[in-house]
Image (cartoon, rainbow, N blue to C red):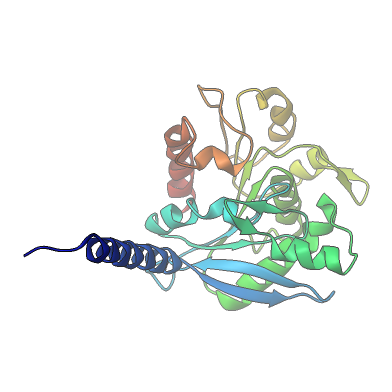
Length: 256
C-alpha cells in the first residue's frame, strides 16, 4: 500500500500531538496548583506535590531571589519519592524560573507593594499557618533557598513548636529583621538544621552555622564548585547527586 507525502506528514503531526499531550498531562499530574489568600490582599500561588501516604510529613519550599515556585519542579517529585508531601509557593520577592512566572510578585508589583526580601516573610508565615491547619497531625519542615533560607531560619525561631527542622541552601546575612541579624537568629534556633551552599560560599555561611547550638545540625560542603541555593539539586547541575545524598541522609535521621 502506498501513502502520499501529505498523508505521511499528517500522520507524523498526529503522532507528535499525541506525544505532546501525553507528556504535558503526565507533568501536570505531579502537582495541584492552589491559591492562598493573604490578609493584605495577595493571592499566593502554590504547587502542592502530594505524597502517596496520607500522613506523610510536609516540606514547605521557598525559592531564591528573582525566582518562582518553578525552582522546585524537579526537586519536589523526588522528595515525594522519599515520602514527603511538598508545597512550593511564589513569594512576593521573586520573578521567573524554568518558564514558571511568579504570580505573587506580579500581583504585588501591580498593587505597588514593596517586594524586598524581608517583605516576603509574611508569605512564609502564611504558608506555615495554612500547613498547620491542613495537616494538623503531620511534621512540618521548612526549606529555603538563598534569601528565603535566611527567612526560614528566622521562621524557625518564631515557631519552634510547629517546625520540626530547617533545610537552608545558601542562607546569608542579607538583611536584619527587627534589629537582629541572621547570625543572631541562628543562635536562637531550637531544632535540627541542614545547611549547604556552593564551595566558594562556605566561609561566609559558616558564620551562621557556627551559631546554631542544636546537636542535630549538619553542614554539607561540596567537593566540586557547587551552586548557590536549591538549584544545586537540579539534575542538570554537576554534583547534584552529592547534595541529594546529604539531604536524604539528613531527612532520614530527623524522621527516626
